[in-house]
Image (cartoon, rainbow, N blue to C red; front, side):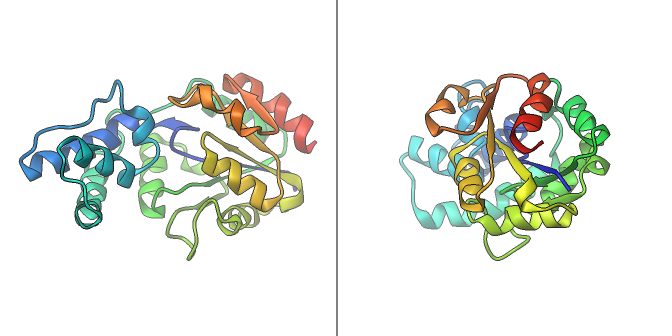
Length: 220
């Protein structure tokens, strides 16, 4: 069974606004005030909670591994309280997923967001039923770029790794696909889109309207 596995943050959905709000809640609780700007720090947000905490703590000259570790659970808690206030699907994302399903592909998600939060977000966006699998950062003992979560996402969806591909937006996704021995499609419409070509993926797309044709070319 041909299978398409998607990353979530920065690929299917722009989650940066809610992630930054959660990080800023941590800085406010510290007494430092908001440190991250949704307009300029979206790229950092899409690299995850620890990246946001690191950047903010650097800006107030308070960076330490211990502080990042201390505030990370708080960030996750704050994020879960308002997970879809600002988050939106990228243009054409849902239509592209629907088109793949109608063409007979299995579709799933492999993300480095904790599985519970990924589940919560997909439910909040009303799209959980479109995906036959969901593997998060804590579903297994390893996370992307290890190949195991990707393989699990394909198999949970009922597919075969040899007839699959990964859609993502970061070097982590590129390296995951390489580790699994599958084609990688990187999107260029996110905050780091201009850097994607340098990662030498099998394909780049600037809009989800392009996805169906690219997937057909890569895995049939």
